[in-house]
Image 1 (cartoon, rainbow, N blue to C red):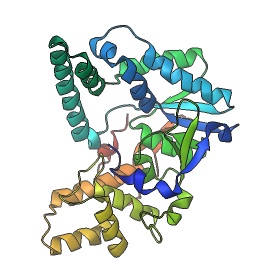
Image 2: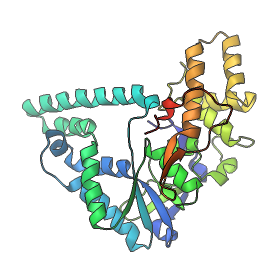
Image 3: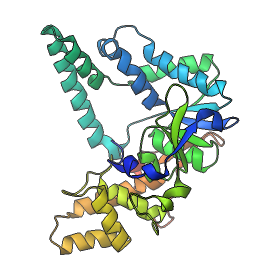
Length: 312
């Protein structure tokens, strides 16, 4: 899902870029976003368990394009299920099942176009699909990392720790995570748009002057994210207005409660957990070969952190 409506509101600071501009750089790739795009052309086969390699070929074409322009890719895969995302994942799985039964129904009714559309919505990038791609990456000597939990946190860690120079993805969550340099909408020719955290204060559509990294994160969570649904009537623009005025989520929630908005203690607790998940999710450090936190939780924090993903 990402942060609904965030990328269009940051259009003024998105700069055109070609992958050749990253020659001699190392980039992390959101592999599941490539696999999802590649799967669109063979969704029926994947849903029915029929042999196909189109989705693998799609990914390898892009890997080879990066290498052609002198860019070193590190393909990052999602790992285990993150407890904070279970509700969202269940919803997505339900939607895939519904679309699969619709696809089969359309097919039996002789409507291949409608069936094709539903198969595309039903396709699931399973661990076995990821495994098939990993085998090809090994043969081609392409670096890859399987995150303990979410690829988003893993790619942000690689970027923040300067193990990669940029991240290629379609997911706006990376901005909430604090990833400094992101390439969006990269096509098969290597053309895309670049986001840099350093330009946020210059943004036009959403005035972020005076916004700290923490305020940006809290605004994104307020507006609704994969870890927490927004309060009724709360979109990105309203969340922005409230954060601009009150500077912190606890003051925003206090204001909302005072004005008789339904803010339950459960929402407040979930908000805190969502914030900690963005800040301290568990990631893998390829340099030390250890599982660590994206950033270290404060020493004073004594509650269980299993919602960040249990320590493997």
